Length: 219
Image (cartoon, rainbow, N blue to C red):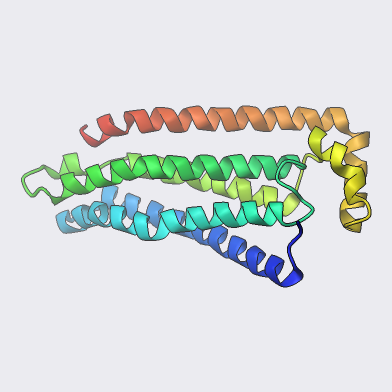
């Protein structure tokens, strides 16, 4: 079930636009979080945390879902497939994970906005380092996903290797790519393990930061 060339270009454009837009939005949120945490002006600090929640709902969440859904559609509608290449699988896991963490963190955004809106709360309580740390880690994950999409490392999965004869006639560039993983299978597997360990470590770090988010906001 392959996409037509026109639909494929449209989906690819939507995926690139939403993915890069997501990265840009996270950078903007990082700047906003730094301003809120470091500014000496009370209105600026409170305003920064008040604007995070609605801005996230109207910018971060739509871009995250658009990137995820367009990426899945592009994989299923082309010969790349969803589980045939390690880079596609890793990119999918990163995008799903970042989207889920974002949705979970929306509760923290609302909590910080509630604290910032209370004029009797001291400014030191309003300041929160959690958005800075989360934005940095999210930016790192999204940049890793971007690099995976550009360089397409690690070769084919076992599932993709089994499907390789079916794709040899359908898409000639894909037919030539699987030759490299065959000669470097042990090295590729090592890189996959390393990438998996990094992904698991990032996952644990995100979960720990999320659990500590509430205590940070009341510190």
